[in-house]
Image 1 (spheres, one colour):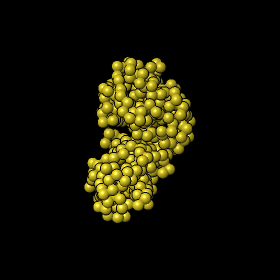
Image 2: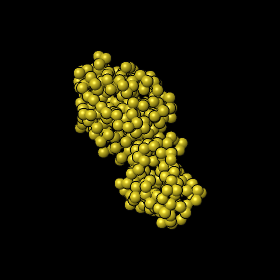
Image 3: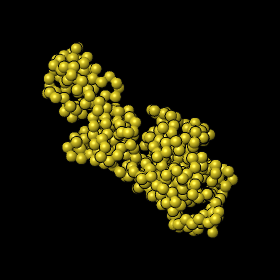
Image 4: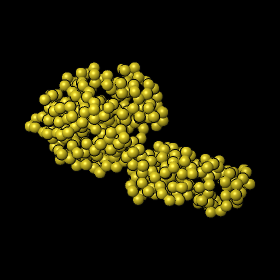
Length: 395
């Protein structure tokens, strides 16, 4: 039987990072993954540029049944810590918007950095190896794999969630958690496009490719002011992906199509300065031309009428409708396109300091499989780094 000090299951962002830091402590460390390549979600992140963290990371940027759980790990391993690691490897980055950092050398360079860190620390990576069973002894674990049996003192589960199954996502982490008495917060796709049915879906299909800035809200979640994109099946874009993490089936998403705070003041100015312009022309000055016919339904009169015929009340009613467009999705694109998994291993039985199980000494859960889900924009990678670092100090 092969013997190691620490066995990490899952060669994604969290697993590789944890293994490298554990090996650097002098622990004999092995990483297993059933895939052919490591860190596939790192590879596709940010369109291949890898949005590896967010400068504004705070526990408030995460969903969890315990909103305080992530504070400890996030405070002890910060975005600037990962930036310092990248700098030591000669990598650079750019801030895009809202604190999002992207790697100039693209995602492959970050994967290579993680692998180099593991190798230089003396850790080992073994791919195309499936896990068959885990048995717990008095002070160790016996892990049966397709490669053979392994004995380890510490077992770190970093296999992620259910998002993007074509990349090998499975529910293995949840199965292992249940085996050791852990509860699972119901999982659902998060950061995912929303779909619609019926007439509104046909409207959106005709608008596929049109984008505009909006403020999107799925109550009781916060509001997100970012871009919206119409698709053949519904709505996408950063604002919708953010709101989707808070959306519940049967509930509406509220769109403010006038997020800059000026409302329809440009229409009021047009009424004074160019009074014979049409309502349609006025709307076309604020929104993409292809969208105007749909938005015209919010106006009670003909869109060909001159703006000078609009009363203050007419404009106020139109303004209110554009600022609070209630839309009820029929569903989402599901696991196929979800960027992350919401829910997961309940935090109540995990140490916030070390991510170690309170039910079984030496067992750790890190990364996406835990009930900590970040916003769009590098937050989930920062949770991967932070939770991995916390576990690595104890595994």
